[in-house]
Image (cartoon, rainbow, N blue to C red):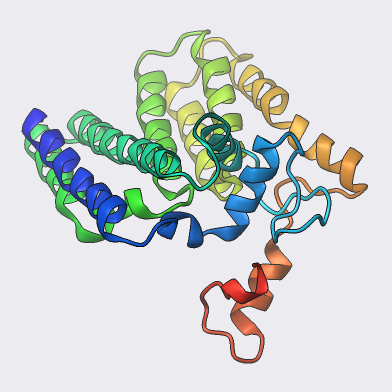
Length: 259
């Protein structure tokens, strides 16, 4: 297991080195301008605002989790700085390597050590996954959160305890603040856990639900208060449809429309 994790780390650090020293300055931040603008607004104390630059006011274009992480990095290391690039890619490398570890753990629990090694090795050397640290988006963290949820569900199903249910609810809430698209998968995993564990403490699933609401509810409540609209998850659906279907659309982000 250690050898597979070391290989995964080495390959991803090679990508980080290449991007930092071989690619143009600010290359990383040029690929996700909407995320970067939101992070800059948060770092400057302006709140979650102006995903297309300028001063367009509050927004729910993206969930607050990943912009907040990037905003904290900007606050500590400077906007668009070399140090900020290195720290963000370092964090995304950490997320990617931890995902390998969690996948191996889950595979070993469900199958056996041999399957765990095969699954871990695949994730360690797969070319698209090696490149993940250089993708400035929540993809790496979302994958880690989803696989972590599977690991947590296995633990709760095998050894149900009262304390597990609020932990699971808080986990789901935090994961959705990073990526609301995880909601169907997360709820399905919770449902599977309830079915498998047949909880002796019947209030457990309800405590899980209430904890999730306590963690996640401030986001749609903020949207209702600030934007005067019911936006439970995020508000970028219309833009995504337009981006892929307007005349001349390529399916990729048109940087001229946001900078």
